[in-house]
Length: 192
Image (cartoon, rainbow, N blue to C red; front, top):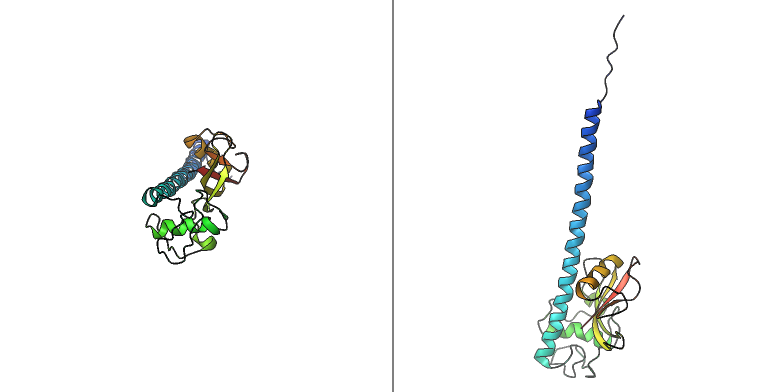
């Protein structure tokens, strides 16, 4: 009688394979978390950079970019009304919202072609949305302020930004959203 050789994996071999698979999955999850954290940091840096450019323009020209009553001789830039608030549209830039981006670029405070207009002029953020500039009422204690729009960002990311820079509540303070942070996509308003 011939003896049959049974070939297969031992429990130890299966356990080792399972440990390796677990380590690989953990590394992938950790890597994705690192990518998300890097995107959040870049978004915060972008917002701080736009804010710094806005206030540098104000210091230099004593006017809000886009709302400035002077064109400073820049081709294609229209004068604003000088009321301190950006009018127009933040997501499809027009009026003073459009002029703000051009003025910041002509002044050398932001990089990009200052002659670009419309949606193409809006800088992109790391979460596949765009930045914008406009004004809104932030409530009785703060009033109407110009803001940096971060459109189409995940609610969890928006909440983290709010927590790091304000009170963590979507409808109060100087960082607000258009809806609760439990939503997949919100527009974030960062007061200037």
